[in-house]
Length: 98
Image (cartoon, rainbow, N blue to C red; front, side, top):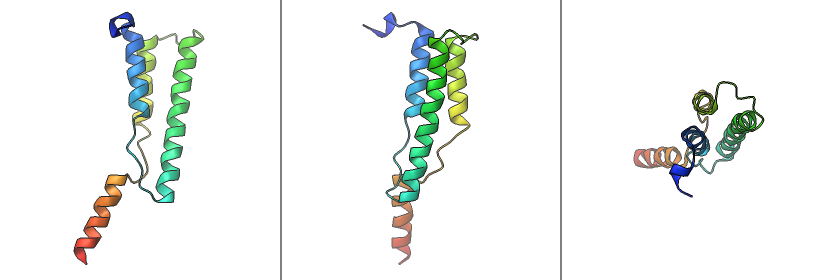
């Protein structure tokens, strides 16, 4: 199977799913790990809703609309945790200050 075998609206929805699930790694701090897991859980729920609507035929606005809506809802819920890179940058700043 090639990407040309997949209808464009379905490819767009699959791309939106990948984008929604692609998140930076959290720091090793417990609070950031919990917030990361919460973020991922929220995003999985959004994906489930979009896919469910497509599969059960209630996506009355179409698959493309579901993909766009998924992207918008994910953007409305940005990660609320410190990433591993942010943690390391903060650690390096503190170390430089002495």
